Amino acid sequence: MKLRLTIYLVLFAVTEYAFVHFEISYTLSDLKNYTDALLAASGMVFTIMGIWIAFLYPNALSRIVNPEKIKTADFSQTLSETRRLENIVGSVLKSAMAIVFVLILYLAKVVLSKTAIYINHIVIFKSVALSGVTVFSVLQIDAILGVVFANVMFINDLHGKREDRQMNDEI
Image 1 (cartoon, rainbow, N blue to C red):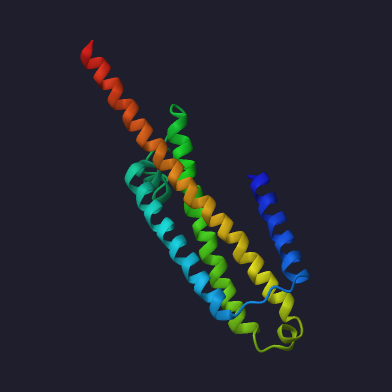
Image 2 (image 1 turned 135 degrees about the vertical axis):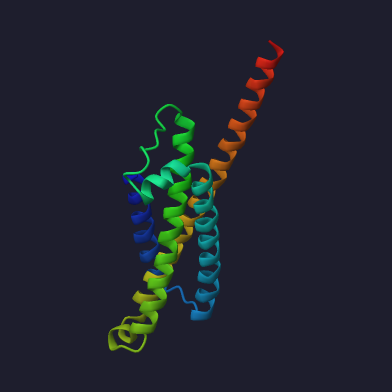
């Protein structure tokens, strides 16, 4: 976890430096079109994976809603279940962070765009925004790949269980 956070922070710093150094220019409408796509992808992953968690792990969800009602879900027996749940929850959290970032970005644009500090340092502000969008794009791609991985693990488990049942039936 710390390694990934470090990688994202380094990526932010490197892109920020590159965007300031090379004075990457873009229009707000270009950025808005892209952030709309980022929001759509994040919302899709957030929603679909939230449904997966509620459907596949109702005990874990019930524990969150009412800690006294249901015993803590125990995933220690099956490492693949634990990894799948970690991938799904991680994807939901990454998507939520991307959504929050875009909301903050839009709010900052509205609040700061007419201030003297923004006008005097527009290159830095635009570079920070573009760096943030770049990092959160990588984060969202990581979330989508996590969803794909979790689904592949799920299909592999289904096939494994089916093959086990067939072997047991043949014996």
